[in-house]
Amino acid sequence: MSFPPTPLVRFLEDEGLRATVEAGLRKVASELGRSEHDFAAAAFVSFEAWTVRPSRATTRFGSISTRTRILRLTTLDCSEATRRDTILHEVAHIVMSELVSKSERHGPRWKTLARALGARPSGRGVDPRFREASAALRADREQIVARCERCGVEIKRLRRSTRDWRRYAHRGCGGRFVSTA
Image: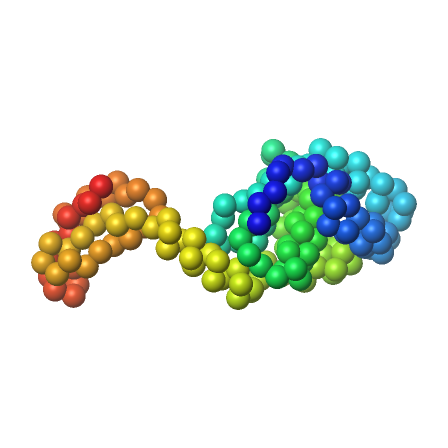
């Protein structure tokens, strides 16, 4: 699933998550020493500077860049629950970096905020559909970078290799590797 770059506020509305995020922000505001209305309003003002873009990553559902104010979401197949959880997880990171603490990653205050928004407060998610789509994409992208001259075993990588493969011996047969690039 691909999508065009979208402002975060509009993206939350399109996904039907604006009310959920507002309610979560109001719920947790007093624990973070803020007034309910002001905290939610300040968060949505900060969201206006953020853009949601698709990600080509094969190992994570989403990520944010506070420097460029971009939230990246996977374009790979995953369940609706995982997608929703990922969006709320990343929104919790945005709120923390913009309004609470730039340095707190998955700490106690972030976990409180993530729970209030309705996200599971963990750094890693598991989704079988994503795992399958990720494995298929990785297999398509892999390239053979070296081959054993004796038995023909191939070494595959996602990126081009600058390694001098002649220096390495294959443990299985003792043959030397030859670069294919």
